[in-house]
Image (cartoon, rainbow, N blue to C red; front, top):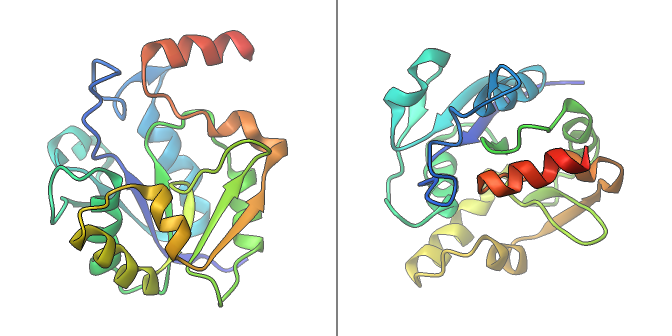
Amino acid sequence: MKKLKQGFILAGGQSSRFGTDKGTFVLEGKKFIENSVRVLTPFVEKITILTNKPEKYSFLNLPTLQDKIKDIGPIGGLFTALSETESEWNLFLPCDSPFLTEKPIQKLLENLDSKKQLIFPSTNDKVFPLTAIFNKSALAKIEQQIFVKNYRIRSLLETLDCMKVDCEEFKNEFANINSKEDLWEFQKKK
């Protein structure tokens, strides 16, 4: 399978509910963000970390980008990435999905559709639009949404031409860890 030119890791969150930086939190000997890098590597030629604290991720020796528009959440990272990328297709992963493996990413890439702007995984009860492939053409809709101060990622799903890829068999891999309680709950289920 041909690699995409560009991958991005969203690591710009405040981690306020978690109490410490999520990307550098260590679980089973690895930082959360190291798992994101490991998962992205087979699928992209270049990885860029989207963060407003590049010094925290200097140990990765990867390029970083800071949000062009601060304090608007993940949509700010998407806007920054898509306005800077030269790649038509861009693979995004959050830094706080430490259980993610390559399998669902492979499935997303197998479903790459040139007519879509956003391809993301879904399970029976959830969608995961930040573990996704965005076409650069999505930038215009993201800009429009920011202009009207609507920073909700879910709103993008209503305006972009999207494809949901059924990833029910990987549902436990998408656990998004927002608090230490989330982590403990998920580990109990494993």
